[in-house]
Image (tube, rainbow, N blue to C red; front, side, top):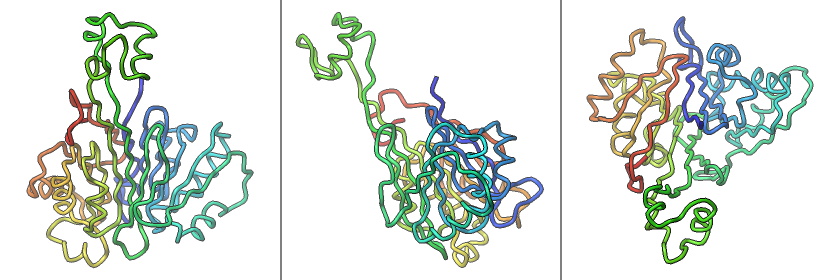
Length: 311
């Protein structure tokens, strides 16, 4: 059975707290694992969350501030120590290659696993093509170059068993119909329905900008920073971050189904106010204020799919 869920490893911003580790998020997608922004302590959080090095196929770094990248050295070495049996691909801002190289080779170890680097060189770049998904990157607004990531599953069709049976189509004939588009006078449209591909976006350190909306558009699950509460909007603007209300309004305007707020400043000991600000901004979809070691499934597809809000 396929699994699509987000495993939250850490939710702190610049400084970890007693309750919150530095950043780290793993998206499990049908047997593939994508690690986003491994901050310090990611290896240990993976152990606590039940995520193994063997589960990782991609690493995506939004930018090279320490709370988003200092765990790279340990994760890469663990991948090699455990002799992960498949290639791992790393994505990061091309302007930060010197930082990636330093972290990749921070100490001595034996390289046993191919690690392919596919950095993001510009805005709106496609880093991976289907199957099973397209991975895009867009440049955000932060004091250092930062990219957000968007994963898009190709649209498809869902076969309808009752209609297939009514037309006497079964076994290998189903595959023939799918490939040819018609069989014995029966068209594919008559026995299937559109199935919209699912969409996921990961948006970290940024001010509100056009890229936030482009990444969030029609997402089934949006993971987005909300470092500050709305009352501290001036600080958010100064340091290149979002407030909970800004993140929620973007999610509302983009038709996001499930919004996950994370990356909280250590100044806040109680995060219930983040939910208050998000709801106050008019977001009515599913809302999660993330905590460490939380597992968040992607929303189930909506019946029929096809439309911009379909799953």
